[in-house]
Length: 123
Image (cartoon, rainbow, N blue to C red; front, top):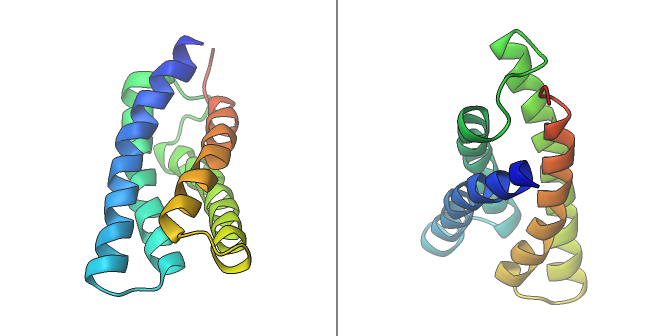
């Protein structure tokens, strides 16, 4: 439960970066919402990776930092695919505003990311 709470704080910081990037890319630069969401997700992923290693999970089961980030990123890519699929369904199929779709989809992706990433670290 402590890890889950710490991860929530880290994910919140990452989400601010993610959501801010989405808004800048979509609203200011006019980029399609799914591309903007993907860019935001990538920036948020980097922030969450750094903060998770420092404050949440501790020592990784994987010795190589490159391999550790690669696995962390693959989990993120699965989350990104899930995020984009859910956003597309909510926005294009159900007509929900993309910002609300992002919030809803993020709740699902958050749980996936936490559980999958937790498995990378020693207890």
